[in-house]
Every structure is written in C-alpha cells, then in structure tokens.
Length: 195
View 1: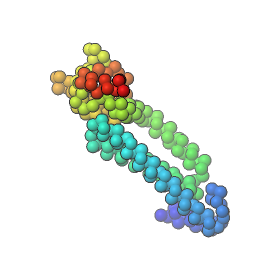
View 2: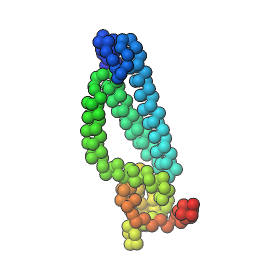
View 3: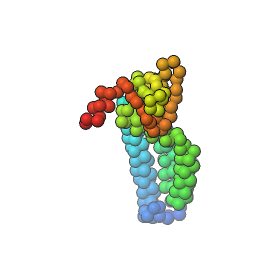
C-alpha cells in the first residue's frame, strides 16, 4: 500500500496530467477509474479463459489436479498483468519501460518453456478434438509402434499402460505429431468424420 500512497502524493502534489487526464483532483479520480477498469478487465478475461481451458480439459477426462494446475497458472498470469497495470498507471514506471520489461520477460519465458508450452497447446487441441480419452486403446508410432491403454491424460503428457504393465509417458506434442491408431474410438471419431 506504500506504493499507492506515494503515487497518490505524487499525483496531487505535482498537479500534472496522467495519461491525458485533466489536472488536479480530477486526475486522481481518472487514475483510480483507469486502475479499477483495467484490473476488472484482467479479472474477467482471465476468469473466462481459465473456465474455457478447464472445460475442455474436463470434457476430455483430465484429472482434478490438471484443473487445479490450470487455475494456479492463470492466477499467476493475472497477478503479473495486474502488477504491470498498477505500476504503469501509478506512474512508477513509464509505458515504454513496462513494454520493454514485459517483452523481454515474455521472450525469456517463452524460450525457456518452449517444449512445455508446445506440449500444453497440443494437449489442449487433442482434448478439444476428442481424439484421445482415458481408457482408449492407442498405438503410437504407427504399426509396430507402442500400444497400450490410456491411463492418464493431462495437458502436458499422456500415459499409456502396455500389455506388459509398463507405463509409457509421452509428451502431447509428440503424440499429436502421430501417427496415432485409436482402436476403441471408431464410433466416436466416425461421427466426427460424418458431421
């Protein structure tokens, strides 16, 4: 709350404009309105996006742990976005500084998490398309490839249990790259082809 007090003192003492707002006491109200609107927009968009991804995961039979992980990840992203908005609107950083820092941070995070993000995006697309469900008899890698029952399906990996009882953990980007033979989903996938 110290940063808010400093920002409020700065706005009222310098009598300057904030993001094109009028001077004086009116700029404080504009600042607070912009802050409330921005934080509200972040909360609404983040909540809707979280619900969308969780709904897709649940329809495909993903575990409660996966849904919890999605909620936690989206919460962290919403907090980071809110912190960026607060520092920019309060005058603690300029727009250029905020854009530069967020751009560099985004690039570093995306490079560091490239494989993980690829697996998650592939997992979301496979769950949405309904290609793989828990209990399906899959063969990965075409004829002569790895065959087993899907025992766990998450956003990042798919677990197959072979006839020998061995568990194979396959990254979703590898699995989506196929080929996949799904022996138990003929009726389910046949309907998608006809519709």
